Amino acid sequence: QVQFVESGGGLVQPGGSLRLSCAASGSISSIYAMGWYRQAPGKQRELVAVTGSGRTKYAIFVKGRFTISRDNAENTVYLQMNSLKPEDTAVYYCNAGIFNLLGYYTPNYWGQGTQVTVSS
Picture 1: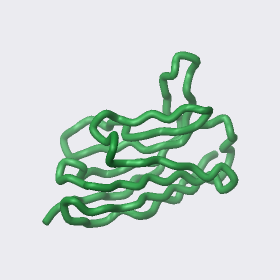
Picture 2: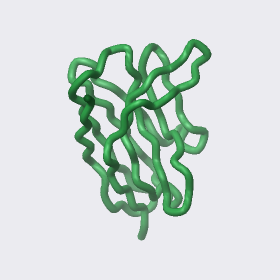
Picture 3: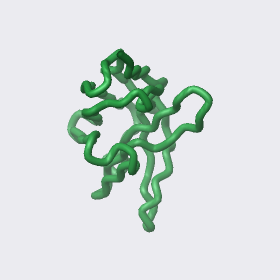
Protein backbone atom coordinates (compact mmCIF):
# COMPACT_ATOMS: atom_id res chain seq x y z
CA GLN A 1 0.00 0.00 0.00
CA VAL A 2 1.14 3.54 -0.73
CA GLN A 3 0.50 6.54 1.47
CA PHE A 4 1.10 10.23 0.79
CA VAL A 5 1.67 13.18 3.09
CA GLU A 6 0.77 16.38 1.26
CA SER A 7 1.48 19.89 2.47
CA GLY A 8 1.85 23.47 1.31
CA GLY A 9 -1.66 24.42 0.26
CA GLY A 10 -3.41 27.54 1.47
CA LEU A 11 -4.74 30.95 0.58
CA VAL A 12 -2.66 33.25 -1.59
CA GLN A 13 -3.32 36.47 -3.46
CA PRO A 14 -3.28 36.59 -7.27
CA GLY A 15 0.29 36.79 -8.51
CA GLY A 16 1.60 35.04 -5.41
CA SER A 17 3.42 31.75 -4.97
CA LEU A 18 2.97 28.48 -3.14
CA ARG A 19 5.05 25.32 -2.92
CA LEU A 20 3.32 21.97 -2.55
CA SER A 21 5.13 18.95 -1.16
CA CYS A 22 4.18 15.29 -1.24
CA ALA A 23 6.10 12.56 0.51
CA ALA A 24 5.26 8.98 -0.45
CA SER A 25 5.79 5.92 1.69
CA GLY A 26 5.16 2.26 1.09
CA SER A 27 5.63 0.36 -2.15
CA ILE A 28 6.92 3.24 -4.26
CA SER A 29 9.61 2.19 -6.63
CA SER A 30 11.93 4.44 -8.53
CA ILE A 31 10.13 3.34 -11.68
CA TYR A 32 7.05 5.25 -10.66
CA ALA A 33 6.40 8.75 -11.81
CA MET A 34 4.92 11.19 -9.33
CA GLY A 35 3.01 14.34 -9.84
CA TRP A 36 -0.06 16.46 -9.27
CA TYR A 37 -3.60 16.65 -10.54
CA ARG A 38 -6.17 19.23 -9.53
CA GLN A 39 -9.93 19.45 -9.34
CA ALA A 40 -11.89 22.67 -9.15
CA PRO A 41 -15.53 22.75 -7.99
CA GLY A 42 -17.82 21.43 -10.70
CA LYS A 43 -14.94 20.41 -12.95
CA GLN A 44 -13.16 17.19 -13.79
CA ARG A 45 -9.86 16.28 -12.25
CA GLU A 46 -7.02 17.32 -14.55
CA LEU A 47 -3.30 16.71 -14.79
CA VAL A 48 -1.08 19.58 -13.64
CA ALA A 49 2.43 18.14 -13.83
CA VAL A 50 4.14 14.79 -13.47
CA THR A 51 7.75 13.65 -13.52
CA GLY A 52 9.60 10.34 -13.51
CA SER A 53 11.14 7.63 -15.67
CA GLY A 54 13.05 10.30 -17.56
CA ARG A 55 9.93 12.22 -18.52
CA THR A 56 8.31 15.43 -17.31
CA LYS A 57 4.90 16.56 -18.45
CA TYR A 58 3.06 19.81 -17.77
CA ALA A 59 -0.44 20.91 -18.55
CA ILE A 60 -0.40 23.74 -21.05
CA PHE A 61 -2.15 26.08 -18.62
CA VAL A 62 0.74 25.95 -16.11
CA LYS A 63 3.76 26.00 -18.40
CA GLY A 64 6.12 28.79 -17.47
CA ARG A 65 4.45 29.29 -14.08
CA PHE A 66 4.73 25.96 -12.27
CA THR A 67 7.81 23.78 -11.80
CA ILE A 68 7.77 20.17 -10.65
CA SER A 69 10.76 18.55 -9.01
CA ARG A 70 11.43 15.28 -7.26
CA ASP A 71 13.75 13.95 -4.60
CA ASN A 72 14.00 10.25 -5.41
CA ALA A 73 15.94 9.45 -2.26
CA GLU A 74 13.07 10.80 -0.16
CA ASN A 75 10.23 9.73 -2.52
CA THR A 76 9.08 13.32 -2.42
CA VAL A 77 7.68 15.47 -5.19
CA TYR A 78 7.36 19.25 -5.12
CA LEU A 79 5.30 21.70 -7.12
CA GLN A 80 6.49 25.29 -7.13
CA MET A 81 3.59 27.48 -8.24
CA ASN A 82 4.30 31.06 -9.24
CA SER A 83 2.14 33.80 -10.76
CA LEU A 84 -0.95 32.15 -9.35
CA LYS A 85 -4.32 33.07 -10.81
CA PRO A 86 -7.84 32.77 -9.36
CA GLU A 87 -8.52 29.99 -11.87
CA ASP A 88 -5.76 27.93 -10.23
CA THR A 89 -8.06 27.54 -7.22
CA ALA A 90 -8.64 23.82 -6.73
CA VAL A 91 -7.87 20.81 -4.60
CA TYR A 92 -4.45 19.55 -5.66
CA TYR A 93 -3.91 15.80 -5.49
CA CYS A 94 -0.55 14.10 -5.28
CA ASN A 95 -0.34 10.87 -7.25
CA ALA A 96 2.02 8.15 -8.40
CA GLY A 97 1.75 6.18 -11.59
CA ILE A 98 3.47 5.01 -14.72
CA PHE A 99 4.32 6.44 -18.12
CA ASN A 100 3.74 3.93 -20.92
CA LEU A 101 6.06 3.55 -23.89
CA LEU A 102 4.13 6.22 -25.80
CA GLY A 103 4.53 8.72 -22.98
CA TYR A 104 0.97 8.55 -21.66
CA TYR A 105 0.72 8.79 -17.90
CA THR A 106 -1.67 6.68 -15.82
CA PRO A 107 -2.00 7.51 -12.12
CA ASN A 108 -2.35 4.49 -9.86
CA TYR A 109 -2.20 5.93 -6.35
CA TRP A 110 -3.75 9.11 -4.94
CA GLY A 111 -3.23 11.39 -1.99
CA GLN A 112 -6.13 12.99 -0.15
CA GLY A 113 -5.55 16.42 -1.64
CA THR A 114 -4.62 19.87 -0.41
CA GLN A 115 -6.68 23.01 -1.03
CA VAL A 116 -5.17 25.90 -2.96
CA THR A 117 -7.20 29.10 -3.02
CA VAL A 118 -6.11 32.12 -5.05
CA SER A 119 -8.12 35.16 -4.07
CA SER A 120 -7.72 38.77 -3.09
